[in-house]
Structure formats: structure tokens, C-alpha cells
Length: 214
Image (cartoon, rainbow, N blue to C red; front, top):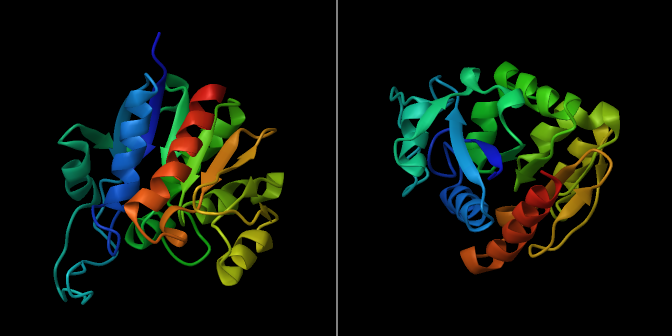
């Protein structure tokens, strides 16, 4: 039977939602690995709406995270509140600074629905993959377990991960870091970049490892 993998998105576009390249590559490698993916996103407003061309905030504008993430998922997406870890074999959370903010719900915090999901997969011993800046979210939930993660080599972000009790491992863009005990794998992607060809190898390795555990 094909493995069923849940993918958590949060908007569309790196500045105010999930990073499109990272999300699309994740879906591609899941499909090429023979898995069935199902996309979820919070049915909430984005933290901000940003013009991804100019980088400027669109004052007064509002967008729904799930509606925007449906652009990536080609319309096949469900509310994050409906994600039940018992129904899936693994979890993938792509990055993007906007998606990170949408899934953070304040400094040092994690969206309660994402926390529930990550804890559910962890408690069931099911594998999870976190890409780009998303490992910080994983650290906020699983730091107490001493999880090993990478965001590449950014000292400030690595320090934030370490403050949770998690362990940051320096890695190159084409590499992933796998915590064999907790079944958590991560890769730097656009935390290092610089382009789609560079991040593809790391994401492919990350997804391959996830599916080997699933």
C-alpha cells in the first residue's frame, strides 16, 4: 500500500506564506517515492499580506492561509484542524518566512493545531520532515526530547533551536540531518540556497529518508 503523507502549508509565497519551491519539490519527491500526499493548512488569516514582488506590506489586506495554500495544492487541501496523525504514515512541513510566522502564532510559540499534530506523530513514533526555517517549529515542540535538527549554519537561528533543548547540526544545502531515534529529518533549503537546483538535492534526500522510515 502507498504511504500516506500529510503536508502542512500556511499560505503561498515565501514572504507571507509557504515557500513555493520547497513545497512543490516536497510534493514531487513524495510522488516520485510512491507516496500519496494530502495537504493541510490553518483555516486562519495570514499574519500579514506582503507583495512578493516589492517586499512591502499590503496594509489593511487580509488573506486566508488555506485559501492561499490551495494554489500550491491545486485546490486539494483541508483545514489543519482536520489532520489526524493516526490516518497518516508521516508528516512534512516546508519552510518560508511567511509560513513560519503563520505557524508560529507569536515569538517562541507554535500554532496550537500544528503542536497537536507534531506531538501526535511523535507519540505514535511516525516520521516527520522539516524544511528550511520549519525546524525551529519542530524544536519548539520536540526540544525537550533533545531532537537533532538543522537550518544550515545561521548562528542566530541555530541558537534559538539550541535554547529549546534541541541540538543543531551544521549541514550544507544538499544535505539532510536525520535523528534516527526520534525519526525527524531536516534540511536547510533556502536558509542556505541560493537557487532551486541547490535546494532540490537536500529536499530529495530529506523526503527519501522520511519515506524509508514511514
